[in-house]
Length: 281
Image (cartoon, rainbow, N blue to C red; front, side, top):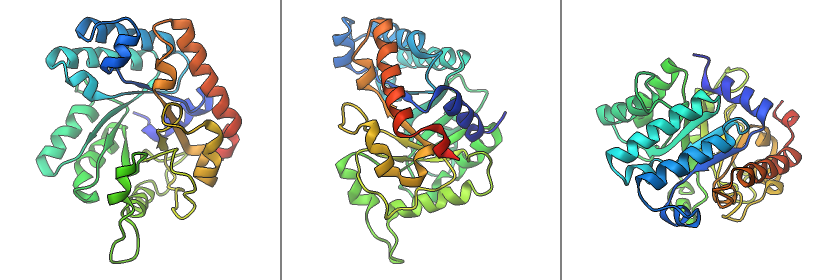
């Protein structure tokens, strides 16, 4: 399979870089007039895919909102992933897995093995058992043409407690993760497959080297307070590789399909204006 970074770059160039979350939490299901049950979960997920799969570059299902329903919820997640990928939309599974050894390998096989019913184009992972603990996921992603998004500088305020902590060599933990990713992506064309999660709400990040030759998944636009216009100031010269994630800002307009499409198109237009595709070159 063509490496994830190349497929993502092509999707961003043709469809724009917008990533829409699929986050069926109870309050959102209620606002759509749906019950907080399997039927509601399935209707919600199917509607989002139907409305947006032909226009957005990336979907990001939040695994936890499906897992809370047990095996039936996982079955809905499997169908959602399959339907989205069949429609040509890349899927980043937001599961934030992180462990060591054979356990990390099992997590990787769940989401990054082409034989798995949950196979996704990329997976979010947590490196805070040490970056080296991610080796099974890195290796399998390379073999399968998938990608990873590593938590580096997240948008939640608590994240700074770990990510801004300074090592004995004077470099912060977040900067260390970015350096590891830059090494993974060295020489990749047109873009590497190993990305970072970097919050769009964090303000000036000029003290960090975000030029990792890989994608930067940027939550925080919309309900969390960041706007598309903030992206150049936050990401600087790396803004062309940013994949802005919007969840509630789009999903609150459901279940009306036309309204979902209009909301996604509005965010996409704002992002293109703030960070036009040529800035990725």
